Length: 353
Image (cartoon, rainbow, N blue to C red; front, side):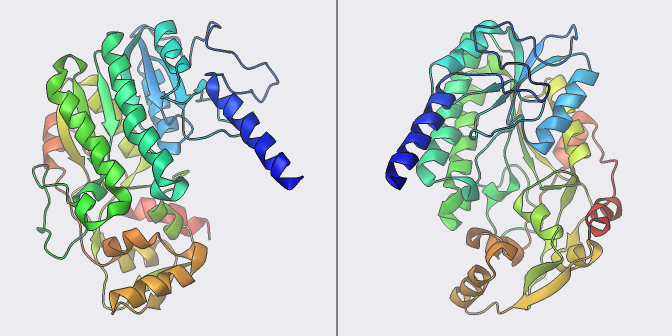
């Protein structure tokens, strides 16, 4: 009986994923299908922009910025089926399913802002690879087929990997060593390699790849933000690496600037200031829980014992070694400077405790 119920649930979920459907709205209006006339959000004159990962906090900020600058926005979510979505989500669709092309066919997109990536903690390795790499490859193929002239992709500074031999300041030419150091995030490296291939293969897409430092602030639900929001956060004895943080509002503004200005390439995005991990925890109002750091196997075992309080085991090295990225190229190219200070950022987490 229980097995039959689970199978029925899986069939219902699969059926919901096959058709790109507008999510049910809070006001009770019926969801639209791919054949319905979906206008998106905003009524600007600068064209339509697809934003993937539209349910995320960063995407919601980016969508607001795009609308304010006279773009129409169509939000797409592919990272799973939920009962409710924010108003920024227009379609829920698997990139690898045929109906995804209907979204491109219906809307004459001028650009794509690809913010969605399934993280290691969110799904199985097979599904992550299918969505992050295979699905994104199809997205790029459809973007080229339907004449999109601008593609922006959000990567992560994690692709550099955390290692004691890292230089004190990492620029965009530094190799992406995370695939060798941390196999769990190999799909993030492969995803960026895919965009790099198309950057040179399809110059008409004008691809921009952003590698931001730790994004934090209201609504952000990544691992570092979750730890800053806890009353107790773990530290490794003898380690307090330097870290960089960027406010979600500043990051959304960086995305908009990179989208509007035509400077294809790969860019780190980070402020000039940084803070040690333990100082960041104290500024955020967290109590530090010290864990043994040697031998490494013991440290990983101690982290696993913390359960939900702990970061994923594959990120432990980021709490041991500094990974400071050089954001000067992006700042010069796009005339960008963050507006939110670290004190303001950490005050948000301190106020929640």
